[in-house]
Image 1 (cartoon, rainbow, N blue to C red):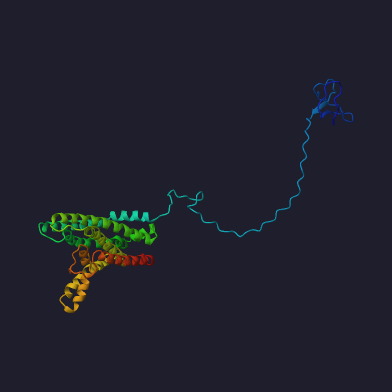
Image 2: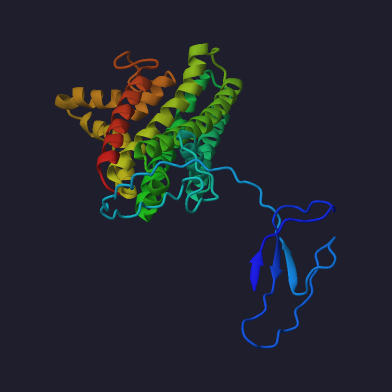
Length: 356
């Protein structure tokens, strides 16, 4: 069989390029010639038998591709030592686990809210403040009823007796604000939620002082109004009103803050309460026994002058010794404020250095 390309003869239309004829040739020898297949292309007639025409479509010329210069072989990279995988950042956005709880920085306001929740949800707070209000208001009204109709110098000055007994309730509350957490072990939970120990102590001091000041000032104001209306005495001045109401509230609150600082230093409820009662009552008791000795009268007068009961009486304008010796007016409040500031500063230092 021979494959041969022939041009298209005849007057007919010209065929497209790439037309080839496939023609079978007789075999050599005496073998009978096989019957060929007849295949006729279009537009042809009378072709020889055994002739087959193949039409191959002309291929379009392809554009020559630009020869690229041979690239240099890439340098072999030296194997780096295998590094340990980085620890996953759980708070990173889009990497690893992302907590659905919003993460935001904490501040003193969060600690104040926590301490307010704790101090108002404890039974000891309600009982202690309730008893203090009952003592201040109850004894103040009883004093006003007993002295009603009598001529007195300053009616509101007799509120000292009720406030003095009220201080015996604020001292245990100030100690229990912090020492109770050390006794039960809940201070560990508090410091886990708020690792800043200074912030915790500051929040306790602010919440307790504000609560004690508001409750005491309201109670002393009510007693002062009752005494002023029921007793026959001179009209008190504005300074005397402030000292018998706001000054007494500040003094009692500062005494409770001093008790809280002692509780933070000792970390023992019974020990801190005993120490504070000793500071408040012991100087007066010692002075009573010293007054009988002529050689110790100077010491007894000093103990009475700077004792807590006499300081409260001075705020109300009724000092025990009746003399102008010692601090007068707002002086006792300034002395107690300085002592409480020193004790609270020591509590901050010890809180930071000592373990729970």
